[in-house]
Picture (cartoon, rainbow, N blue to C red):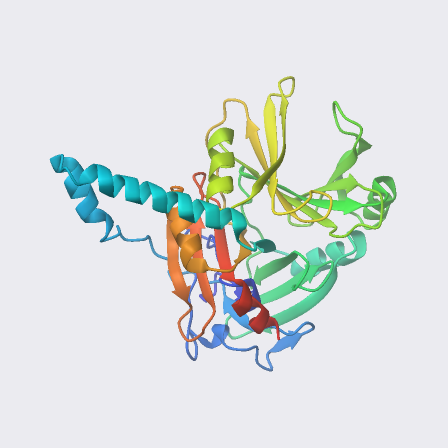
Length: 371
């Protein structure tokens, strides 16, 4: 990867979402360019075995071409051909099939990737204040970047974060679209006191959420990423509770994540007094797995993405059918379904209607990468 970006583990499968200059990027290199796709070398300090994949500054992902199969159909429709209705019906049936697959597929939220300007301070905050564990670290001085992976358990079962630090880059634009990460803890007040002792920034003191009984608090990490602390009774199966992203059209976003991602709408809440609506989307119960929290603020249809937040990765049993479901749901394909060059790991990457990127990774290939 160029000096301005960072590296991503292959087990996290093509992590790059937005380069420091705001482009959708990712590259691979056979010696210099594919080396990052090969099993981690002595340069990598592996705490939990995994190979690597680079976060780069120039384009592995590219817009999907118009399907050749679709071109004759479009031509028939434009000519009013008698065969058009039958072709359109077949295409509709196919769309139903891929949507059904998306809902029945064995999917799980795997990880999130984002860039930080102070890796050591962030790592200290995550481990000491939030209770995460470092699973893996890698420093590549010749490429001028460092990666650190943290979470609350192994990648085979838990959601993890990948931090990317680029030498000399001490600040990123988080943008207005990213919201926060949610962490479930047994005692919010106690956690907040610990954060204060460690010099952390508390932006909302512990207390019940407006209009509810859940105890929450908000804090910022050293790079300005917001974390919501959510009080839950123990034992907590997955402490990394949620990733919150803002969207410009809630109904559109819910429909997209149901059809393209196969997620379930776990709950939806409208707050007219505060002028916002939230929807929890995921693959399992909200109190047992990491979920996606979508937020719509009344009257706001667009947000800036910045160059800090990257993307989410999700496991799938079939990246090809997933690609069809994504396209049928109107996603912008940024990397067509197929194996990564030089590897057998299969992925497909796409943007949702609001421009948020997701990479789907073949489940079996993912497990092989963790061996």
